[in-house]
Image (cartoon, rainbow, N blue to C red; front, side):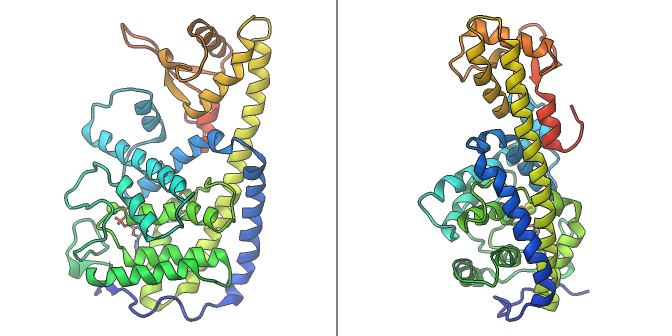
Length: 375
Ligand SMILES: Nc1ncnc2c1ncn2[C@@H]1O[C@H](COP(=O)(O)OP(=O)(O)O)[C@@H](O)[C@H]1O
Ligand SMILES: [Mg+2]
């Protein structure tokens, strides 16, 4: 089969079958609003949900073939050495993804969601990664195509527009992004698909397109913080994800894509809600427990909650680093660590060996973020 070509002149879509979309638009917006109820009520949602952001970076990168797991990324961050070169490169890409996300969120305080912001995010995403000619932050100057890894152009499934057409296509994309649409979530669906179809960068388009989702939700005030994780659904339905994108260009089937995307939003809003709820409950529960456990120990109690906050940003860590970033005196930190391990709040992943300190984990938090028992 010859490759499907970019739908030149076919954007934005001229008609959408709203009869098929409207039954999904209501539930998608409702689930999102319900999820935002949690985000807007919790002042430190960003901190507590940090592990979910890392997990999203892992899953979104995994859709594109990286092999690093959530645990490996966190162990690397804790200072563990990674002998395997490929693995190290994968971890690097995952951490870049998260940095790109944080960079974009910070920039959105002063800059609208725009081509410029997307280019900046791409630059962070591609910092020091494998492969030549990745040209961080710049649109491609060469053709590209989508298909089996390493396939020739004739064997491709899809061919995006020629490089010289990318700037105009991206301008149209940006105009659409800032314009009005029948519904913001439909607009988001179309923005993701069009971005993928243009494929403006040599690489990183899939990841950037997914990163756009939380950014858009915040920019359009559908969520109060950028803690929306779409990738688990896209990974679980990857073939359908690619097929629906292809059908946009091949059959002008924007409606089919929007149906798929709205279902992804519904399912992930529910899943995100459940995880966020579980994490907040865990925080409250452990706060009571730590306060209680440190109760009789003079000088420890006021530091218990500080230690807990620290743990949420570092659910795997070197024992010797415990609370190093906080203002907790060393001996107190060691006492709290011992109490937490003795009580089973924390678990030693690897005991200390020689001069190498123990690696310690916060299993309940990690398991919630992963969605199943791993630790
Ligand atoms: N037929 C298609 N039309 C448009 N986009 C597609 C199609 N098939 C896959 N994609 C998108 O292309 C992405 C892969 O592009 P790529 O630039 O390699 O992203 P990354 O570097 O993040 O791996 C997929 O994740 C998907 O979003
Ligand atoms: Mg790629």
